[in-house]
Image 1 (cartoon, rainbow, N blue to C red):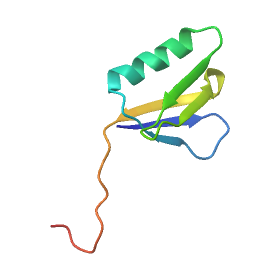
Image 2 (spheres, helix red, strand yellow; image 1 turned 45 degrees about the vertical axis):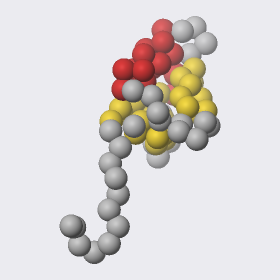
Image 3 (cartoon, rainbow, N blue to C red; image 1 turned 90 degrees about the vertical axis):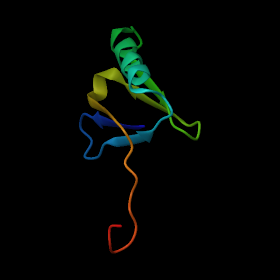
Length: 75
């Protein structure tokens, strides 16, 4: 599943391919916003961890991955 994280003051967003369900990502975001240390921690499909301070969060977009088509014609 694809998760896009907008960062305040950054021109680009973080895009994470995660094995988590949308409900699990939403729970992680809510927990990070409610926690005193204020860190959102997400893991991607390769095991890398992404850590974002919640005061820098602009938005979190949770959606399904789309497969990219390669070639000139759509079959």
